[in-house]
Length: 257
Image 1 (cartoon, rainbow, N blue to C red):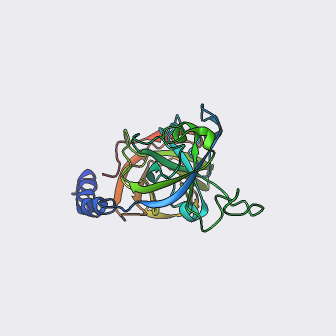
Image 2 (image 1 turned 90 degrees about the vertical axis):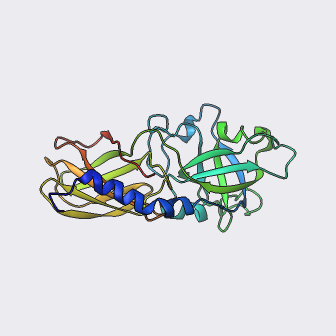
Image 3 (image 1 turned 180 degrees about the vertical axis):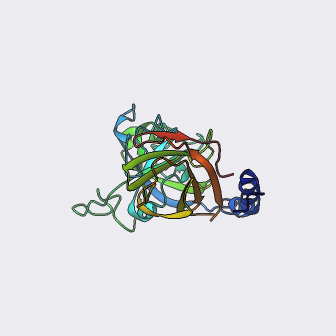
């Protein structure tokens, strides 16, 4: 990188160049048909953790407005962090007149091959299905319904603050969970740059986690993050200090528009 170029300017230019693409990804998004159930209770305690790796969803900023997606929607984890607007339709248990609720994908609803897809195997391919946290389900329908038909569409994610990076791994393997992502909410690819290295491409581990097999201890780290949906790229310079350690979460000010 040219030392005469302000890194913050690169972030702004990248975001401005892609804002049209980001907006187009959601403008006029068609409503699609699916079904929805719920898991856990009113406290949403059973939804903590999940396949995306966000851990405690209250601490991660997602709260109880979350959903586990069926396989076709989960897309091998690339749907983690995406936001969906959901409304109940065609059921006497729907809360008609209530606004559609917005949830974030934080988990996978695995197939149940022992059940028929239309009788218990709600998350079997090729069904589009949302297994909602109970508080989210109760915003659109009576919980006693168990399962209801829904309409859904992708919407932009509105987040407070910047992207958060949760670190795991060891001295030769860096594993990073990416949370609180705005805009499309999802991640296609990442790269990491140590204060003494060039850019190192990170591979997709699972859910919202990316890994680099490199010794990066003792270096401040920057990240290059690209959205799966919009292909928008931002640079998060000096995201973590040189004394970073596994088990900690680092908050930043950068996020997708």
